[in-house]
Image (cartoon, rainbow, N blue to C red; front, side, top):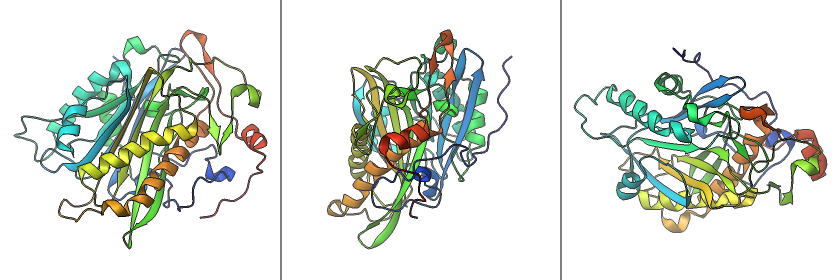
Length: 357
């Protein structure tokens, strides 16, 4: 029987992130960790499933502290292109209420992950009499580098990701649901970022996490970057396939309608990175608020800085997912190269510098 992975505590990424390289996107300051966990009450956990050479997969959990069927969080969802299996979409869109953590995984494992999430939730205190539950599970197809038909993600992996979720630094790149994903011609994975904004005289945090696996041509600070321009070789993924799931968390008081507006911007932001939004790409965003239900929502006219923060945060999170990933050889002997940081800086003509904080 397959053994569950050892619990993984998020750690500071070994590779340099966007800001470490002096690539600063936008003008708003990040939170202390520049991660979705800068939003109070939000935790992230990963379980990585790797069996060389054929399996590179996993599951990532975004866990709001108080979420449950009796204490749902206001949420919105937006579909850029619907070629995907975002479990729980219809109820989320209809009611604007998030009842469970948000889990990300591999396409053919999404349904097993949803079932495991339901089982985990029914064991939570206060759920003893629950008769209906809407699990939210997103997915990307990691079949280029992983034996996707083996459906390697199992219940023990889901529980490991949920039970080890932490509010500290978030591991990025080839971890959890990003272990086998590819984006914009390079090895990608999980990426995250955050921004602190002023809305109506009050400071709030917006954090994003991406599972990057989409086609197109990478753009960094508006410049086109390809493996060839950086002198790296590997298996070129089909530019017309792939997906991306974006999770946005904020402590700003927003209702479901406003959060849907936020989710739209998260999908729009992928265009900045070079996303192709192709026929075969499932491009989704789920946005939720951790604010108390009784809080008065921020007025629509004051949402501009939050929209901009999400656009900048998603762009940075995608770049972080690429910079944190490592060159991977997987199923069928296919190799996808990592984005080399030093070659990227040379191409941008920007030497490393200490980013402002």
